[in-house]
Structures are given as C-alpha cells and as structure tokens.
Length: 415
Image 1 (spheres, one colour):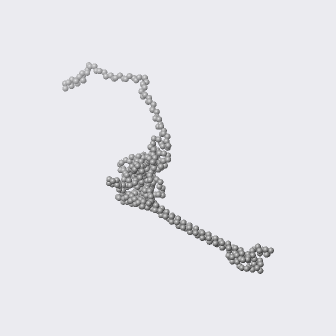
Image 2: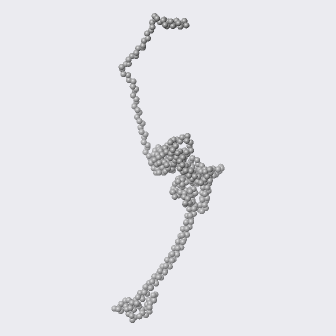
Image 3: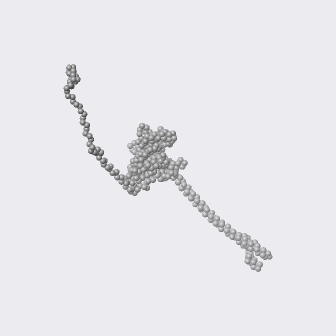
C-alpha cells in the first residue's frame, strides 16, 4: 500500500521539475520519383502453329479401302461373332429413338448405322449389295433381341446405350395395349399350340450362332460340309453315355427326326435318290420369312437358291418321295399313252388303205357311168335327127352299145 501511495504521489506530483519527452510524428515518406517505372508483363510468346492436317487415306486397291478389315462371303463375314458384335455397337452408338424393331428405323438412320460400321470394315464392290443385306439382317436380329431384353432390366439400373428420355418413351410404348396384344399373339405363335409350361427347350448351342456351329463341324470333318440334318441333330441333342450316343431334346425335335428317317427309308426302298437337305426342308414346312426351322441364321447357307414359291404352304403340301412317286406314275402313263397311240396309228393306216381302195373303185364306177351317160346322150341325139333309125339294143350303164352313131356321123348326114 505504501509503495502504491508512493507511486501515486510521484505520479501526481513527482513529474514536476522533470523533463517530459516530446512525442513527434514520423517523417513523411519521400515523394515518389517522377521517373517512369515499367510494371507491364513481358509479352507472351506467339501461339504454336496448328498441327498439320492428317494425311489423306491411301487410295483403294481393287475397290478395297486400305487400313480396314476385309470381309468376304466365303471367309470373314457377318456370321462371325466379332463382326456381329461390331454391328451391335454401330447401332448402340446412335440409338436416339425408342425403336422396337428394325422395320421402324428410317432409312436415313439405317444408313448412318451402316456408315458407322464401315469405318472399320471394307469389301469388294461386287459384294456391296450382299454386304448391305447381311448387315440389315444381322442388325435387325440384334436390335430386336437386345431391346426386348432391356424390358427386364430394373429401372434403377442404367442402360448405357439408352438415354433416360428414350428409355421412358420405350417403356411407355411397351405398355401400350396394342403392343401387349401383338406380343401375346406372337408368343402364342412361337409356342405352336404347346402348353407354355411344357414348351420344348429348343437348341442347346448357347450364344454360338448356327453358322459358327457349321464352321466348327466343317473344320472337324476335313472341310466336308455337313447336311442340314447333321446340323439340326448337333444343335438339338445332348450326349448320353460314354459311347458317343445322343438323344434329341424336346418332343418336336424327336418328331422331326422320326419323320425324316421314315421318309428317307421309304425313298430308299423305292430306289429313289433324294437330297437330304431337300427332304428336311419338306418335313419342316419350307422357308418362313427367309428362315428354315432349326437352322436360324444358317438358313441362307443351304437354301439361298430357293425362291418364294418353295416356301411352306398348307394348300399344296408335298414331300420329295411323293413327288418322285408321282413322276414314276407319270412315266408309266406316258408309256401306256404311247402304246395306245401306236395302235391307233396302225389302225388309221389300215383304214386309210381301205379308203384308198374304196375310193379307187368308186372313181372307176363314176368313170364308167360318165361314159354310159355320154353314149345314151349320143343315141338320143341320133334318134332325134333320124327317127327312121332305131337303136338295135339299149346300152346298159356298164356296157357300151353295139352300134351307136357318133355325133360326127350325125352331123355329116345333116350336111
């Protein structure tokens, strides 16, 4: 406390007589120099020149674009899995509308998809039409299958090739009552009258296309092309046991093979040669929409030459054996007809000979009758000119008169 008071006293009065320091302001800064100071940034370097344009593609050789993969119908073609996958990619990159099938796709969009595919592949000019046809076929099949599978994908899962607005329009189209009606009708047609719960399993080749199955069979059989029946049996049977035996899967597959074997044995028993592929085509009912039952996309490999009148028709059913039997019957009918014609010709010749004989006799009688008529006319004229002269005997139609004046004698007497 004493210290506090001492400080307080000195604070209140202790400063008297002492020198109080002066507080001065700091000197102002010197004025800025009037000299010009360049504070600008250094100039930027000139921009680099643009890159040169890419070199033009090399010119085609024999119609083939260089640096592209060549496709040929006899080699690498649209039946190959890699090619089919790139066909799918070509339309997935530009799927901007809820198309349900390839028929709905406008031609301009199809051309765009085809141009996308051609960026990687090339072929000779003579294959242009065939390549476009094969592309449309493969693209239509893949579009239908993949888009139909998209309906079963949950809504919360994204579909990479389908935008949200396109997917919403796609779902709306599938919910349309008219579409549901067509879908049920198509499903019933695929069942072919079978009960849905007992539907035949169909082929067992998995994701491998039928043309690829044929290619594998050819490579394993020393480049020998299998028959249609061999392909059908390969893709519709399962191995049983360890001895290489197989069993057909499904009731329909068994019926087709049983009918084929029966018809084949029937033709062999009659000595009729029959093409196994043609016989199979008759049994399954011909082509339907360009495909043969059991072959899938390999139909054109075996039946590319068949025209539309070979397709299935319930109004004119026929089999190869029936046609062959009919041909044999027609041959017999032709032989019998030829035999009857020969007999008729012989009879006609005999009749003609008899006619010629009768005609000659009739002409002879006519000639004699004319002679007799002339003689009678001469006698009448002679009697009219000389009534005193009477004919000795009357001439008969077939016998000339004994004494008959001639017209010249009568004229002389008148003279």
